[in-house]
View 1 (cartoon, rainbow, N blue to C red):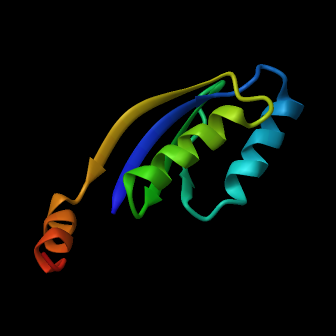
View 2 (cartoon, rainbow, N blue to C red; view 1 turned 90 degrees about the vertical axis):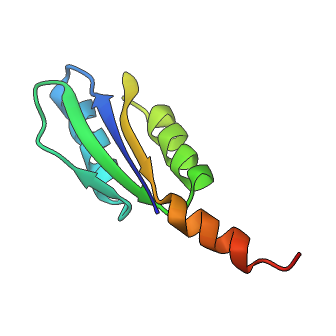
Length: 89
């Protein structure tokens, strides 16, 4: 499991900012934090790095999003080691 946190910079205008919030809230992999002005913390839970990157890029391309900064990334290395150990050689 990959857990990433982003800080999303929203537009200053309230209507486009609300549209971004609605879009993010509609996706189950996102947990939205408390908005601080134009900045919104978002946590993403993904099964792997590729999926985590997909969601980062998806948020970046969302209309109205000004910027997406990665604040934190964590992954369970033991899951990957277990997969490697159980795969046929």
